[in-house]
Image (tube, rainbow, N blue to C red; front, top):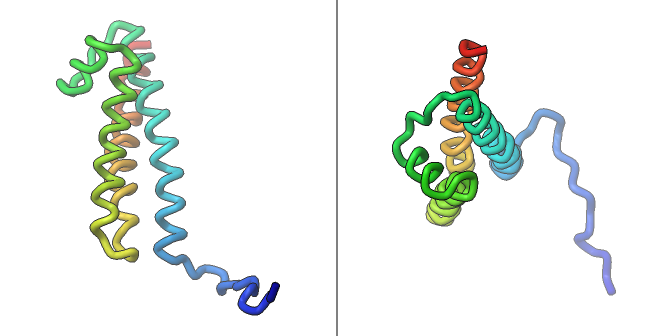
Length: 116
């Protein structure tokens, strides 16, 4: 067994690759997904209504499982489209998922705070 080529490669501090950025953004997607789902169901519990017709239908028909299926479908589409992109452009996929879900969670928190 040879150890040639098994070097620990250190990059200069501050140099962020597209792979690093994509990994970070997938973490943000996970956070945004949880925040959006949690704030949506808190709002629904307080008597608010879902404004997104697709999400409303999924929630009314299947509850939290419907919401998770809808989010899973969106992530699946994103992962499929990700394969069509060059590596340097792949961070756009998690960014495209995270930004609207974060905005939805922020709007949910604002709406919930107005009710309380």
